[in-house]
Length: 300
Ligand SMILES: [Zn+2]
Image (tube, rainbow, N blue to C red; front, side):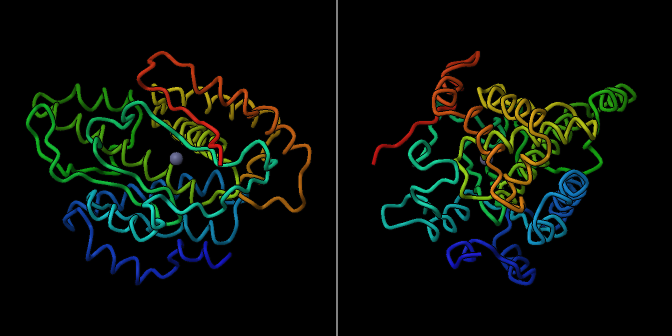
């Protein structure tokens, strides 16, 4: 790990606990449910990825690393990790393992927030310490106030949800919120933890496509339902799924930085499946134009 990377990685559980006690957006009783979800996410990720990741990656999956913070606190932490212009520090400016001429400085634009309503106005930190934003002041359209409870017991299939809900007369709306928020938290925690495992040298469209694809695959494998975003990220995720079927888990070993040698065939396959032209095309497709996520190559 380079010095710069080490700056982003908190390996001390004590420090993480201290940060949580000082900054957590969740009261202790509520945090228990969120922690339980992280445990379940860890187990699901471990089951699929343990043989493919680094020792440090496994440590990330065997501990509670995620901080649930209010937007202002997340921004405060983020501000300590940005450069003087207030932009996120690029750990590897202008470098990509996949051919520097094609993948220099991709950046992402969204025409509007593609976050679910309950998380609107929140930012989610992509890093070695997963930070999930919880807007405690959020009030939903039905008047209920956040932060919302979430529980690992509601990470269930849609069929099981329907069964539970049909056996009840009252409180259906509350239970829907619990079910919905639990899945959203699991999805977000899983997504950010996958980023913590990935080789950060890789170009961001590939990193994102891999994370979206794996969350969907692991959710389906656990019968927690498909995780489609309704944005064109679904197309990039599908593109990654096709590539994975073609290349097998060597592709994941490469993405997680555990492939022994430099795997030219895998790299060539990624370059073909995620050529700048294809990334550009997939950035301009999808049902709702307002929800396109667009990658552009920034010209220096
Ligand atoms: Zn991401």
